[in-house]
Amino acid sequence: MKSISLLCVGLILTAAVHATDWPEFRGPTGQGHASATALPTEWSATKNVAWKVAVPGAGWSSPAIAGGRIFLTTGVENGSGGVSLRALAFDVVSGRALWDTEIIPASEASVKPIHTKNSPASPTAIVEDGRVYVHFGHHGTACLDRDGKIIWRQTGLRYDPVHGNGGSPALVGDLLVFSADGAKEPAIVALRKATGEIAWKVAREADVRQKFSFSTPLVIEVGGRPQVITPGSGAVSALDPRDGREIWRARYGGGYSVVPRPVFAHGLLFVGTGYNRADLLAIRADGEGDVTDTHIAWRTTKGAPLTPSVIVVGDELYAVADSGVATCFDAKTGTVHWQERLEGNYSASPIHADGKLYFLSEEGVGTVLRASRTFETIAVNKIEERTLASYAVADGALFLRSAAHLFRIGRP
Image 1: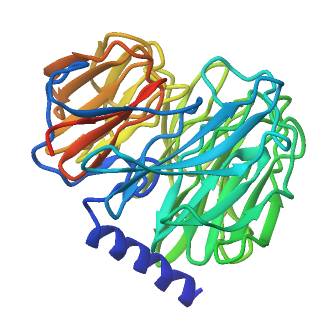
Image 2: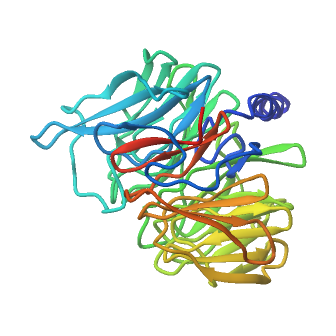
């Protein structure tokens, strides 16, 4: 336990040292916060664009950035029902393509019917100590060095997906943890990050009809004890990273296809419950066993998102529903301070930097708001391309992935 706690602290310190990087989905903390103080607030398809480069294939993984390089994943169809699953790297300053490595060949990966908001490559890469971990859900996982050389591949954990792959992995100590929530026998898996070998695999136990989900785990520490928070269909669980043993769980009925990554602030975990009706739950994270009746501080359906993750800034929690309704809550009580409609529909998760909130719609509309109990729009920006991936921040700039391009917003 002590060694894992120290490793978790080490990861936090590493994130602080390299605060200008964006090494995983939702940034250094996994919760959408950037340390940048002069990000652009106005842009278009041409205005304030340092560069725009074409990205081959199809993918909605968000940019992961470390050591001056941007890492993406993509799937390139071969025209006969197969898809080559690949990892890509670009230079942060120039946008120049650095390498393109095939992880899983088309002979091993097929293009099955997937949701219209999904892609062959939706999980975001995660970067640590010069290693890049890429994940393709039921197709497999791999580790590369920063120059694109494959260190290991793990393709032995196949399962029957619904709508394709989705959730990204998380690192804790010497483990890479991810959800494997398919149509049946959903599970949480931990691989040894050095070798790709399975460290543990635990089944999800939830009495739900629809078992599939797509959430990304979040690693937190409560009372000096690390927890891996893993939302799935019907319940969210906190696991001990040493062996996957469940510390606590909170049930939320028949919710399934859970997508949002949890957020942790003020001792509360903020968790979305998925389809068909979204709830937003605030759960105290210091429990043991089934805490459904004892540790849910508040819950609401008002403005709860199905797909985007929420974000906490100070004492406020901000959310945008898939329909574009944005809400500012009191994080501790759930009281609504304001609720307003933004332009467009939403899948991407918002970020915060320097007192500002950045939202990105599926239609390519970037809305910048003041992080405040009073609703204030700073700017509305349009790139006129479909955008389901979330923002990344590095080198004083915004990085945005559209259906066909990667943008650097802000001059080098």
